[in-house]
Length: 160
Image (cartoon, rainbow, N blue to C red):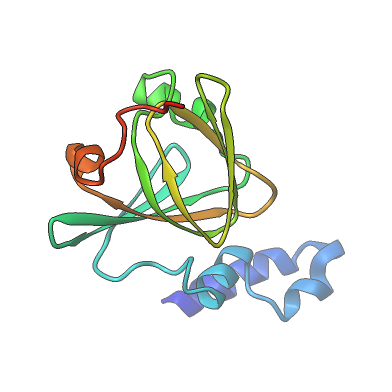
């Protein structure tokens, strides 16, 4: 079934005269990502959904959930998620591993933090954030529902 999708997408791209030669030997961009990088391939046993342009895959691991989030280039929390969530800033704590890409985090007090893969990240609640550059961001994080902050010993908001 996957091969049919790759072939169909390749044919569409090959139909464009300016890219015909370049796309003959390459499958479609999304298919290349999935087949060439395990970081972007579907996670076995995880539930998968998209929210605010972010691909979210979640699996249970003991008392925690492990989440892989893929943020597309151009994503910004205040533009893509704020209308869905209804808060001015992201009020989730993020603790995990930035496996791919670069993110810019800005807190209400003006504090700015940039993370570039590969890097362990801790992002406190009360932030805006966006993808830097033309590559997607892949963040793998550990989550304890509404108990993440307490269980990981984090502050409930960003402080100096």
